[in-house]
Amino acid sequence: MEQADSTAIDVLIKGKGWVAVNKPAGLLVHESAYSGPAPATALSILRKQLRRKQLHAVHRLDSATSGVLLVAFDEDTAQGLAKQFEARETEKTYLVIVRGYAPAEGEIDRPLPGAQVGSPARPALTRFKTMARIELPIPVDKFPVSRYSLVEVRPETGRHHQIRRHFKVLAHPIIGDVQYGKGDHNRVFRQNYDVHRLMLHAWKLKFRDPASGEETVVEAPVDDNWTRALKIFGDAGRLDRPPPVPEGAEPAAQAA
Image 1: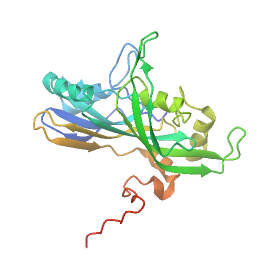
Image 2 (image 1 turned 30 degrees about the horizontal axis):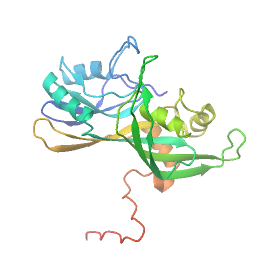
Image 3 (image 1 turned 60 degrees about the vertical axis):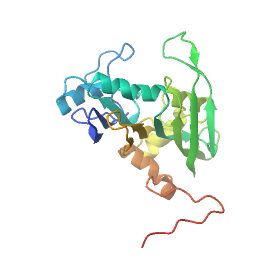
Image 4 (image 1 turned 120 degrees about the horizontal axis):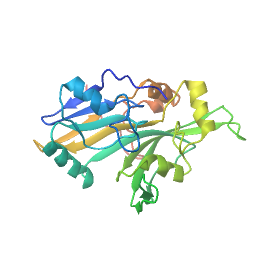
């Protein structure tokens, strides 16, 4: 996996009591009983970078996942934002690249247990829409070609490894996932496209600013690994392209 630079983290937007940053892949948000000690975490770097002793991670991102991370400066702001996540009032949008041709759209409604062994399964819901598909002339296993999909994902809940586990259940594991994925397909991306990470990115986050009540949308740019991977999909892999026009609808008129 590409190692994160521990010197600085890109700040995306800053509010009165919070900041949204673009967490690199390969960086823990904070130490935990599961991760053990770490030389640097997102919070430890941000404390030095922002010159703040107290910071609170409002939600979680796996170490291998990059993208929007929301951090609060005080407990009141942290609690206000956390309540939005708990009440499902936020909108989280992820990007993934998966093995195979994923369905055009759908949802995965399957309970998942927590990280601890023996923990009970809790409801988990993931909605998704496929943005692009590609077939490559690269043989994998007994097949003469390999197929992949770029998918936009919106998890409604936030269970442990939810997106990764749900796409494994769908038989479309995420590229670069060494725990739930397929080694042969991970190697296709490593050896042919210099992509060395889990292809899971927290792309956008919509929430209400606790101080003003205004709706806020944050978008995190992708890293170099993602840029190389998106080029495989050609124009369909452009994240700045306009959404497709529904069948039978007229395209919007462009301003002069």
